[in-house]
Each structure stands twice: as C-alpha cells, then as structure tokens.
Length: 279
Image 1 (cartoon, rainbow, N blue to C red):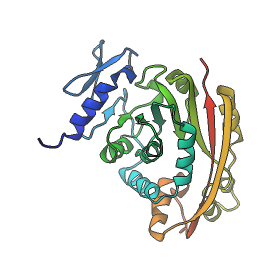
Image 2: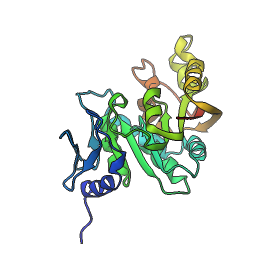
Image 3: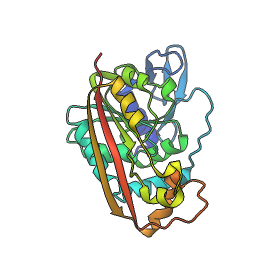
Image 4: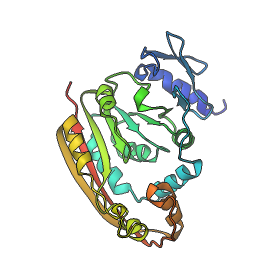
C-alpha cells in the first residue's frame, strides 16, 4: 500500500478530533466528512487543503508576512536560538495538558519543538491568520491540526483546550477565556527590555525603539488570569553569519532598515507569563 497523502492523513486526524471544532460563522458543532469537508448543520463548509490544513477565514485577508519570512523563521528556530525558551514553556505546559492550542503559531516551529519536550502525547493545534505560515506548518509538521483563522471568529468549541500558547503574538483574552477548560492555563511570551538589543542599538539608536517595556502587557495579563507566574529568560548566543539576514527578515525590527546591521551574537530576553482560568 502506498503512503497516505497529507490531505488523507489530515482528514483522518481531524475526524478523530472533530469535537474541538465550532463553526466560525454560526458557532454550531462541526463534522469532518470522509472527503475532507469540515461542515456544520447550517451547511457552512470549509475544505481541508491538499497540504493538510484547513482555512476557516470568513472574510478575505491579505497577510503582510511572506512565504520567505516563514522559511527564514523556521531556519532560525532550527538553529536552536530559542531552545531555552521552548524548554521553559514545555515545563509550564506540564504533563497534565492533553489539548494545546498555539495562537499566532506562524510556521509551527515553536509548537512542534515544545510538544517534543513533553512526556505525554497531546492533541496539538495551531492557528494563524497568515495562510503562508500555516501552509509551511502543514508542510513540515504532521499529526497536528493546522488552521488558518482569526481569533475574533475562531473555529473552536468553548472549553476545548487545557493550555493555550501565545508567543510574541497579539492576545485575545476574551477568546482565550472561552476556549480554555476550567483550571486551564494560558502561557504568554512577551519581549523584555534587552530582547534583540544588538539590532535595536544599531538600527534605532537614540529613538524610542531602542528600548522596550512590557509593563502594561503584564498588568493586563494579571487582570484576566489567576495564580500568575512569571519567569524572565535572558541569554546571549553566537549568531552564525548566514542567519543574520534570516533573523532580520523574521522580526519587524529588521523590516525597512536603512542601514546595514552587523551581528555576531544576539540577546534573547523574554518573559514567560503563566495564568490560570477559573470558570
């Protein structure tokens, strides 16, 4: 028997976990058909693409992120630059979480590396508004559910997830609260003041972009979640020359630079916020 296609494998996997889905248009429960349609009883239907993902967008959206950006992001992730952060996130996910949603997952590298650190098998779902990112995720990471979608109209049933990841991405706290199970946790990662400081110093010297504060973000997080834990992770790593343009492409700090940037090391300075939802 030949190898099952990505679409066929995704249909089987999504059928197995179809109870996670709720129609982004009418919020009714959804069913995954044998021929790859994800549909609700009101006949709103979304097709699983040949690459193995499903597009749940209900209105057109043009992403500012290119396929090239996500390829660069994956190369940087594979270099191990964010490995200490990913290991720390996995520690907070813990061994009790069975369903994990990564919001703003991009090309899926963070989610893939984090679940590879876990002892248990999990149902891993990634959602991003950028089709280019989700196409890349589906290409490289199988046995996961990849969705193009908007958190303002998300395709998931309430109280479906034990853990939600929100890594360097905008938050939607109302939707996070809806999607988390009782006692579920949100893990949010935000930049700290020295994040990518080598780029900031060269590109934005003597401007407000040279420094960064996340005090307001942290306070807002604490308003929405209980039993908040915080951990700051800071380290500086050597940066191989061929990764410099890749890093500059994947971070908004590197966009539209008017000067050349010279880097032989880079600082990662991130804060992990972990909060619990109580229904």
